[in-house]
Amino acid sequence: MARLVRCGLIQARCEWSPEKYSIRDISKKMIEKHEKLIEAAAKKKVQILCLQELFNGPYFCAEQQSKWYELTEAVPDGPIVERMRKLAKKHEMAMVVPIYEREMTGVFYNTAAVIDADGKYLGKYRKHHIPHCHPGFWEKFYFTPGNTGYPTFQTKFARIGVYICYDRHFPEGARILGLNGAEIVFNPSATVAGLSEYLWELEQPAHAVANGYFVGAINRVGKESPWNIGEFYGKSYFCNPRGKIFAQATREKDEVLVANLDLEEMDQVRSTWQFFRDRRPESYGEISRTSAASKTADAAD
Image 1 (spheres, rainbow, N blue to C red):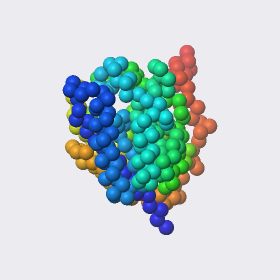
Image 2 (cartoon, rainbow, N blue to C red):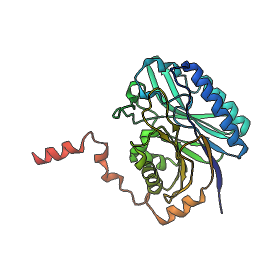
Image 3 (cartoon, helix red, strand yellow):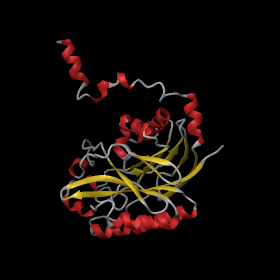
Image 4 (cartoon, helix red, strand yellow):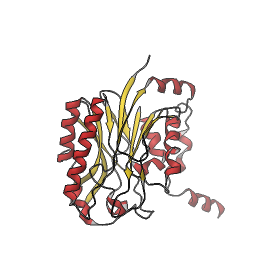
């Protein structure tokens, strides 16, 4: 028997440059823009909605400037999460809201707040894997590595997990989300053409297959001034537990991608592929060691 959950992903361009607008004005405009898109999602009867990484501004990690600390706020007690809680309750829609979190002065995280359909704050995920290795992706300047583990959240409609952008390159956390009961894993991202586009439709379907869950992958769109580090190519999508992308957004424009996810597919797939049953965690110790190479070197000695 089908168990349908109607989910949505929002991809959007930030067209306001800090050359012309203040950081606060940009945030205000992006929030207003997303509120219209959230309204559109509500009209499409979306039950669980995920916004893109750092949704209320540009991808400011293209430079290293402390002025962007101005975007930080407490989670869940900051004004953006409070505003989104009211919208979630109004539309009876669970939401994943990625923002720049301030835990205390000088300690900041790339965070996603999870809100249930009644407006209740369920908890947060903090991005674990922080890149600082490509021109224009200077995230270690802004973010402390996450310390929340890999939680899952029971919403009114499904149990969901969150992985953020660069996290998707690491299968270990994706597996833990599955072990923690995730039925849908959302990955809000900001990535550009020419860097990881060839991986965009490869890695996350692989996570879906390996763990037998659905994935919702979000990427923003367009070029952002003044940095122009490349084109955020959109192409947000939903992938099923068989690894098939069955709904995908366009490359160029703001969009609310909506799809029905039949969670019954998880049972069907896991009844065929018993990956969780056949795991051998007692043999995986080397994964958590500092360096497997050091062990090889020691053996050679």
